[in-house]
Image (tube, rainbow, N blue to C red):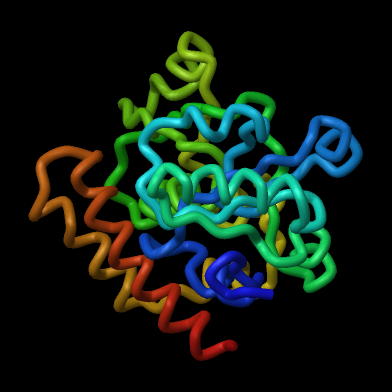
Length: 229
């Protein structure tokens, strides 16, 4: 298959969990999703007939369907006709699942907001990294005082991430029981957590701290995952 038209699962896998990941659009039909309700980490579901009208797609984009055939290639071709760098995932979700690669549970709402306590603890930064880099859709994080997380989640139809939840627990809740990721979350080196703890001295808001932390965790993840693979 022409590599200009398709992206293989291993190539996509190498970018997951980092800012290098392409935009992922899942165009599976509802029948397929109802039988097997999951997404590749970071993907959002868009019906294939609506993808051509999406805004903010500057590329690269990887389009995903059940078997990497007509839906993904047709949608990717439509995006390329609009000047977007788009490819289809070779083999689709069937190939991804057969290789035992990570997945997340299909969210009830495609644009779920997440509520996190405005904490300087490294665990909160890992929570933000998991939501921003691995959860489906384009999630927004609402950082609020710790006593208010449950009430804000209720009022804004969002998902609360309790401060007591470990990053590994959150990954499991998302369906991310992928061994390399779980190993990383359980064995993050002290030097990394020391760096995260220092960030509040450099940034004044939890949003800015979390944004700075993303790139530090990206680098640590690439170093450990790259060594493991």
